[in-house]
Length: 454
Ligand SMILES: Cc1ncc(COP(=O)(O)O)c(C=O)c1O
Image 1 (cartoon, helix red, strand yellow):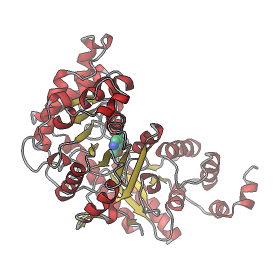
Image 2 (cartoon, protein in one colour):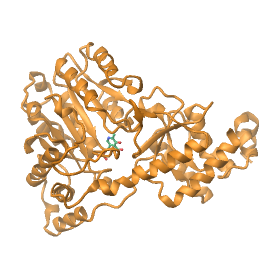
Image 3 (spheres, protein in one colour):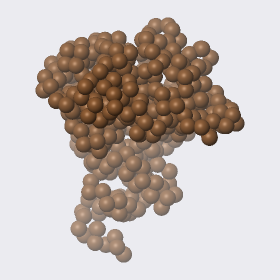
Image 4 (tube, protein in one colour):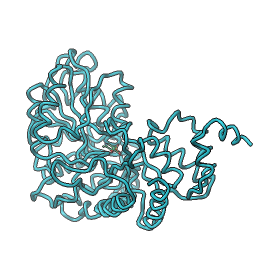
């Protein structure tokens, strides 16, 4: 009975009640209403997850879920076995060293050398509770090393939680959508922000979440040179390490190497996540890698917050001690074993995650065949790579409208609005949870969507 007023006061809902959509339209409309989201334009990833869970529960229908970047592959056995052995060895009763297990630090330094061709002392390779803790620690130290500056410049679109971290720390940020500033055009745009003198750090992910843009050596050189000129620290988020499947990365110690800003400047932090590359998201373990130069730099203004003015010391015994006092012992053993297997050439992690690229290729074709456009469509002069994410739009619909309409067809995603994108018509689609047996369902639902909206 409570649906009646909706029919009267909300004409857009009336249309849906009348339409026969793959998911019961009255349930979808009611759940959207109940969710208390004022609009879907700015709904967070977790809010969409909750909404779709509720619709699935009520209708018993499975969605093609593209909203959240959950790894859809099993974790490598070598990591799991190492964790089990560590458990049996009794490491659970002992506090882990905040600086990290010595063998994990060594193996990370080796990984950086073998897969980026960059030298970093193991001292600067420090475990974190997911790479998200690495960015948090980065802001806590880098954005406080100079009292005249306080903030991060995000090269967007980006991962929304990075900005949430900055906000809850009460720090400032600036951002711009890089789509129209690729290649040499990046220089002037970047400089216009750095000139303000307020930028302590520059953060981007490469490959990029959500657009899957992959910066070139030329662009990374521009970022590195300007960071040096304006004394900003680059925080390079390598959550999708080596996952530009157009390139033949992944042979230890052999080119080509994943491009990195570490080749072009001295002040950098690399964030290495195990979540996607190693399908190890549940263990919340990543590595924060500080360049030797930055680790040893002293900033007197750090003493406002830390007992030492040395970046490396403030990072470990200031920020990371306060955040979690180290990282779960067994998870460190697991990550160590995986990195060792990769470094020794015994485990090619990229072979496993290539599946995401394959799925993206097939899914993009389906969307395009049914009237959708790819929003971030090119990587300077070539088509965007097939990877963990891609971006879509449908003619004549804003991102909020598109998301809402797709929900009636059993397809979920997030809007690009929350990623710092200028493309207010776009959605981010994540391929990881769309297993191959769901592809025919996606195809059928997209066809129906196209029939109804073309
Ligand atoms: C760009 C980016 N950075 C960081 C993360 C978080 O990584 P972790 O699970 O290691 O904290 C993600 C996860 O989706 C991501 O997409």
